[in-house]
Length: 350
Ligand code: DOR
Ligand code: ZN
Figure 1 (cartoon, rainbow, N blue to C red):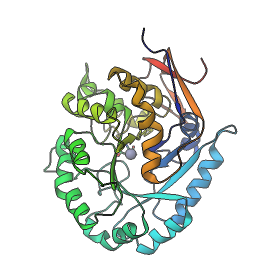
Figure 2: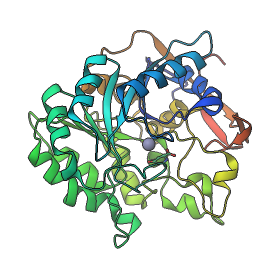
Figure 3: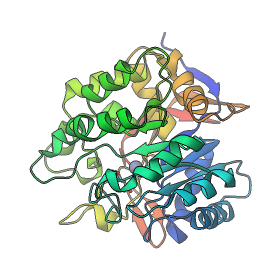
Figure 4: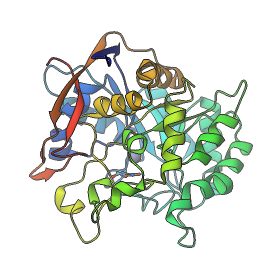
């Protein structure tokens, strides 16, 4: 008989979008129910580029939490061409900023203020390396000449390899990897290398690019980096379930109002904060590796970031339920991934 429940140490989400204001208020409880901590992405409008802005954002998140929640937001700064080395020192000294996010300019949602040329950030990156501040990388090149399905692979060759050669001790998280080339690149950093890791989303583990085009165009499966071919999905599942501590959980849950998803020009992002652990459990079960969920979800990320593993545990039960058609999101509806479809696992009490 198949396994009916699984209990794991309380997990963390190492890559999350919470937005701000009433929208954030609508979604933050979902993450707090699932995770003890989350690395909160800084791509607000305007972006979170200073420690002062990150700390103010943190206060707004804490104020928006449901009363019963035990949740710690781990803040990040948004790297720009102008981020000063002093800002990195301030961030480090705060003890509350845990990373700096590199968005190549134009790569994705709210990335217009991102980095136009990494060379412009050299002194800042040097400081990050010196003080031990991790760099979280959206690993896609943006030149129009590169096919959208090849952008991650080209980023490795054009940006990541030279970056790591210049800053061998800089700790880097290659975020939401989507290709077998990225898996291989992380794996090839072998031996004593503890400077490179990668996060994996539930949607990239569960779906290939076919999901975007099943019977028509499906905007709720559109995210960046875009879903890839089935052979890549399999490589991601293999990495996530391998027990290799360089691969860990980061949902990239990215809420967008329904009107901006079901639109002529649809925004990139899948909303999975509602049922993240259930989706990951499905992917691990499909691979016959539920026993490896705990390391991936609750241990390897904390170890990489140098934070203590959480106390306490959560239980997932095999107890099918139907994901809602929509959720409130400020004054608009938000459509979660797999809206209206059956989810096999359930977090918490049945
Ligand atoms: O799908 C995505 N959505 N990818 C990103 O890189 C950004 C995110 C968002 O903020 O909506
Ligand atoms: Zn993201």
